[in-house]
Image (cartoon, rainbow, N blue to C red):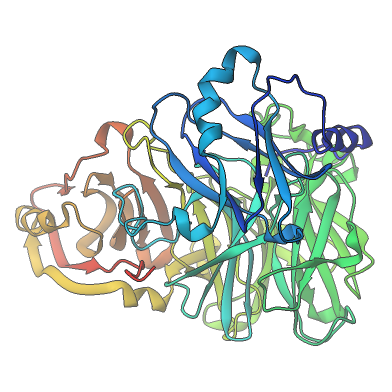
Amino acid sequence: MKNTNYSIVTFLACMLFLTVNNQAANAQEKSMIAGSHIIFPLSNTGKQILIQIHAGDKGIQNLNITLPTGDEPYWFAAYPLTQYQLPSGSEIVVKAVNIDEAENEKYAKAFEIIRSGTEEEVYRENDYDHSYRDQFHASSRHGWLNDPNGMVYHNGVYHLYYQYNPVGTNWGNMHWGHWTSKDMIHWEEHPIALHQNHVKDMKFSGGGFVDHNNTSGLGENALFVAYTSTGRGECLGYSKDGGMTFTELKGKPVVKHRGRDPKIIWYEPEKKWVMTVLDYSENEITLNTPPAEGHEKHPQHKNSNMPLVNMAFYESKDLHTWTRTGSFTDAQRLAVYECPELFELSVVGKPDEKHWIVYGVHNQMFIGEFDGKTFHKKYGPEPYVHQIFRAAQIFSDTPDGRRIQIGWINYPRWVKEYPDMITSQSMSLPQELTLHQTNDGLKVFRWPVEETKQLRSVILAEGKNLSITEANKLLQVCGNKETEVLIEFENSGTKELMINGIQADFKGRSARIFTDRNFNEVFADQGAFFRVNTRKEETLKDTETKVNSATEEIVKSLVIYQLKSIWQKEQ
């Protein structure tokens, strides 16, 4: 999810990293017989080391890794080698590229610890019990995650892939991790589905879909994913083993342009596929729609050339050949930036009235029409209020037609408080999107899917027609617990709450508040309001829980559920 120039120069530079180079004789390296994995000791702070992995005279991978120095805390991660299909007994060499002679001694111990092994060797019984791991939101067992990718329902199973760094709790080394589920609540983690080629050709974000009608010629109901190869372009992969592994279609990109994050849907009126993708190109749309003040540059990526940001649309009948048909942008460039989505919704209560929705990484939705070529807005963008809820994606091919969204929750890494933490970041709960006619026009509402009720364990407290004092007394059971709070006030308005040390304010009369260890999700006003709030460093251990309101306010009803962990002990 970063800007990348796909140039010949960049590609050749990457190849140099992957060939045996003539580093000084004092460079750190280690030889071993290849097993199923290489086991690395990892620190959560410090300098990133570029590690080359060679099999014979061939470079097969490189990774940016933060190795421990001295006696600082560290943890172990296992990087797979099975995808390279090395002959039994093959020797591999792990070499550091950017350690100078003066640093050799600092990293000597780390290189002594690097070894061949199996993934199971680095698993620990308490991997899912650490105090920094969310308990009912999906997170990887080890490593960093960000954007949800390839979200698709196929043969009775929900697939959720994601941007994944298997060798660090920070961003980098982008692979596609993989979970499956029957209910979107309990997830089974699988081996990496897409591996980066190297650090200059990673597998960035994209979507998943099913080719029900065999338009590709690869069989009915073939499962596909679309992704950005950061060194080459937009690629498609198809699976013959139920989504566990993928073969790249044609062995090369199907679209080359300046951009990333392809999402593909089936457009029934014209019996064709439509790809929506972030694009940087000077065209009629970008030239005639100047960016609003403050949107000329991305606050984190100052070289992103934001004035040219648009959503580009491509069409294909067979998934092999693609033609650009149009583009859409807005003066608020951040609203059309990265991870685009395009889908259709009926207005609640008016099933024959349908509208199209597009949005980008910040979940600022546009409502309008899609004519098969490009998008035309009527409403939007929504205000940027979701903040740490980012890069949300919609499941393709759901069996009941629901539009179900999951997003990445981008919260801080607590490396000072938990120096040996083994995972970072989580996904949101799945939420159903619906389209409503309001006094202010059309608006997309969101609500936790019905399946979230499986998380409820016992009722910790409940009451009706409570004073604020009485409500606050009951709310104290939320301290140090994962909970769902259902609260309804007598009057609508802005409500100020704190649940287990995390802000939980909302607008409306009633809300459902899901509080995990690092953040909460607040759904209010029957779905018109949604907000995600994270813990702050200064209140990491805070358990404060209360309603801040006028003393005459009445809480009509309050129910507090304790929520179950989704992590099974046998894992």
